[in-house]
Length: 61
Image (cartoon, rainbow, N blue to C red; front, side, top):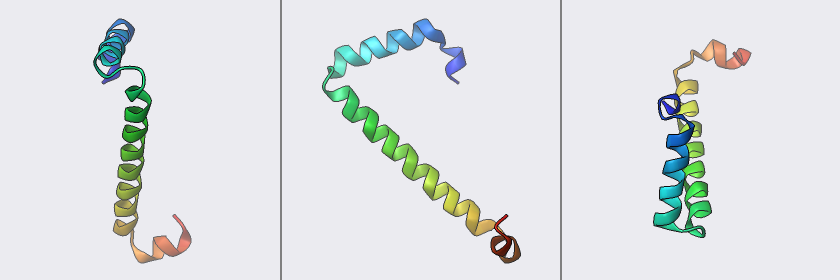
């Protein structure tokens, strides 16, 4: 996904975000995105664990 954008495109997006949101808001937004992704990852991991059969759960596979 990001490989299609390339480095110059990524830099341009970061500059536009800096102009629109300002330097004080960007770290807060980054933290919020990181927390959201972490919660999503944890919830999907829980769903994957629920799908395993009971004997695999006991073995720790």
